[in-house]
Image (cartoon, rainbow, N blue to C red; front, side):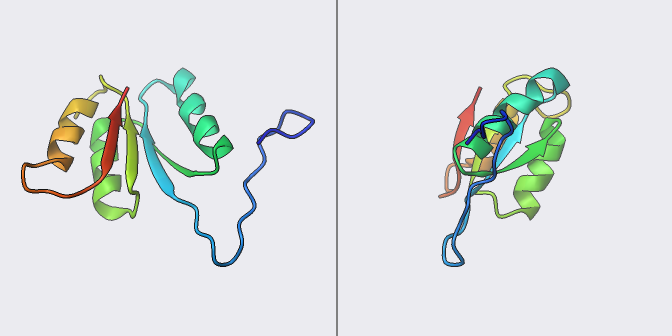
Length: 98
């Protein structure tokens, strides 16, 4: 939520409510702020990765349940991260590739 001054406000949560973490991977610094701001505006905890390799490491070590991935990134691209997350027998994360 934006305040009257245009500053992004953090969502208020109760002790019983937990905020869902979502990984957003974007290699372009100019565009990186966009998914972060939108996810926070919608009340999510945005975890950022700067390339596909970092996204894969975060997803392996973090409790992020959702990922928004850039399609073309250096190292491992968003498509490959999706393939790794969704092997044929896995029942895992919802993924959105942009």
